[in-house]
Image (cartoon, rainbow, N blue to C red; front, side, top):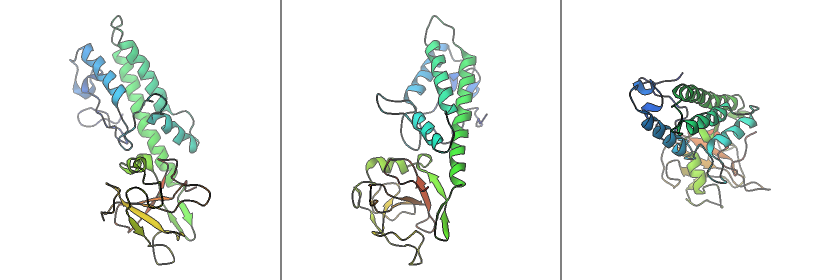
Length: 249
């Protein structure tokens, strides 16, 4: 199991709210927390935890899908059906519901088993997503670019949610980027050119990390999305993260 030096889970990608050490006996080197604290720790975590890269709750909120549901959809696109991370999350939820019944003993072994299985498959399924995209670069002409999943990249999905994919020059304005192939550049030539945004703010500041968007399509409003973390020296093509991100495949 991926534990750090303090015997706490290693989530890859990270989850934005930490799981308190007393979730089960031995986790975080703690063995002396009472059942009330254990129940509170798990209930708070399962209710509040969000995916670090997207800010989305892992569980659904009303009619809005949570991250685990659309992780399963992402996996389906690469031929992996039925997310095991989602399965073990739901199994853990059943254990926690049972644990919260004061007439039942705290199921320490059940919490440990399902949390460990969830953590294992959380890390594994994200790795499978990454590896699948690495095996399918975006190719055009005599050049190819590595593909990354937006849901793995801290900050990308947050910018997409703010609206940088909508409108002619998008809400943050940014600035034009014209370094295209045919001009000795790094990106394929596109009629209408590209529009660049600072990765942290979405605005026009010239930081090293940039999100670069292509023009909208002829028949829809999707855009190519590209990412550079070295001031345009190299790019990766972005996949997913928002319905308006055009698929590279």
